[in-house]
Image (cartoon, rainbow, N blue to C red; front, side, top):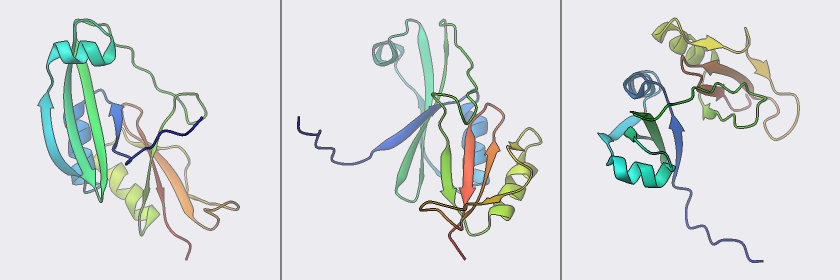
Length: 153
């Protein structure tokens, strides 16, 4: 069977508890650009999600050439709040390459006292294609995780 002819990786979408907080954090701390933030037609969202009575506010943000879709659902539908750990099926995280991992973490932690790190200090990767990179993961208040890494010195 021939593989699908994928033309382009278009965007990554996540669902958050508070789209306004997430947009502000991504813009103010990480420099993401807000392209659009607006509600979508509920009937269209019912079609896309298969959930009746759903409403959504969607923000599109961009960093470099990567597009990021951030959705906050609400309405009559009961919503589940899931917080997968790094090891759980269904977990996702963003990985951002930065010049200074320690400084990136410091800025995140200063933005909101609810932001935490998964480990007290960064790790230097000891094998694989990222060998020598420094890495650490921060967790945002609604469970979204961001890995910061840098290139080998």
